[in-house]
Length: 361
Image (cartoon, rainbow, N blue to C red; front, side, top):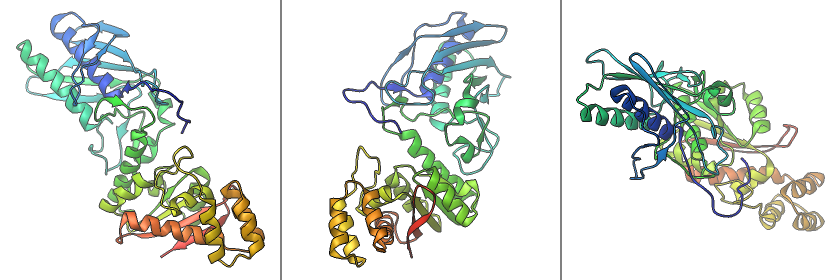
């Protein structure tokens, strides 16, 4: 995750909000022959943003409108993407149907809030688009029988930088957004992907999942246990987002895997492991080292350490099992948040993927 810049940050709009605005413009043109530009929509919390159209076209029985997504100051992979809505008349009585166009994925695994085979357009954006269609149809005396096709050119390439493939969303991006607003650096989409990963794993009857802080620890834990991709949860820095969701949506056995510094933060009770929001407690590392039998010379070196890596190096040089103590403390923190119904294990790996610490039930 990129470091958050200083100063006030500008909010942006979700792909769902952009798709809704594009749908409104396209359906208006289909009914009236004119595209509203800018086009305004109402969001769930009462905001009424307006969007300028980047493209528009009106054909026989269909209309297309496109909007460039502005994610504000959030490092969103879809910032600047073109969100396209093509609205077509449907058969009488057919209602509203959604279709995945170029760059929008399709659901292939159970566990998500959409049926297998459906376009990856989440329930909240679907509801917003359906409300727009219903409102316009009533205003113009039309029947709300339409097909809405959402496209994001280049979306398949963008999706490679998301967790969609692991979640069983193939062919492109998801159309996301609960409030319609992107709050910079809130990482709401990452945390939502963690939750969806848990849902997909549960639907696949996965009994053992690995939640990792990064790619090295994930690869090492995956190789250790031979687990499928469905069992791998990209936790990143969001231990709290993982553990609080597991409390209500448990998986029988969960291995938390990470590097020493991040696991040391979890051991100290931090649930957000990002360097901007938590620090390694060197004094506490020294206490754990003392409990593990470190002599005074080693303890003095650890207390003078500037990083967790330095503290661990001093402990390992002296044959002190500091990483095991830290892993066990992290396991206790995780158990306290996730509850007693889950068998939790914590593994600490070094940068080469070598297992250096373990805490387990």
